[in-house]
Length: 117
Length: 113
Image (cartoon, rainbow over all chains, first blue to last red; front, side):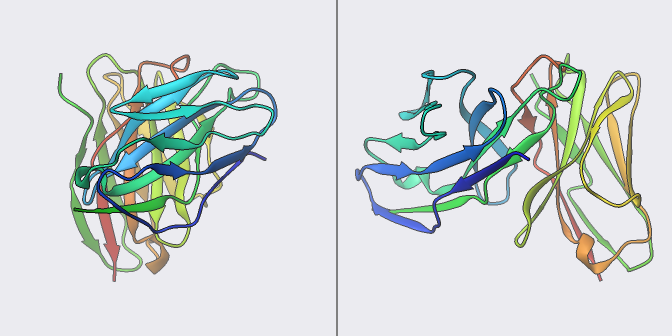
């Protein structure tokens, strides 16, 4: 079956440090890949996505590149801010059997990021 | 445009009771998916609805059910509640089955005592 593995957290950084959160996946075919962020007491927000190999998703200074050869989708940001403190989830979706549905997201376990001033 | 709304935001129920959670998708979105989030199991897919039809179902017991109405609003029901059903239940909407982008609501926090 499909699965997503994220690096263990929590990750603690100082403001302006470089961030990498590793994500690898197992899936047949060509999944779409996502990063979601969850702030305390809130639902998930879509941060970025990539739908095919070598695509780079980017948003708010965050980037991730779909690497099919290493089945990875690592999240990076060059200079983190205190406001980036949150839980980050890597996820994938595939078309359902015989259908066109992207409706099922498979998530990693989440990585807690804390950024100190 | 308003986001995904979920009601109620918080619920406390007793073991054995049943509960119904509601989700209103973003205007124009026709697919709704539900997820359960717990500290131990993380985020797990419950089911997905489109055009009032369940398209996908996760690995949950039959006590978990859902439906979608003609206006795309969705409800999920959990019968005979167990302590392990305590979780944050998240609803997500998307334009339709061809869309890979899902937008999440704030969730309903269910506590079973």
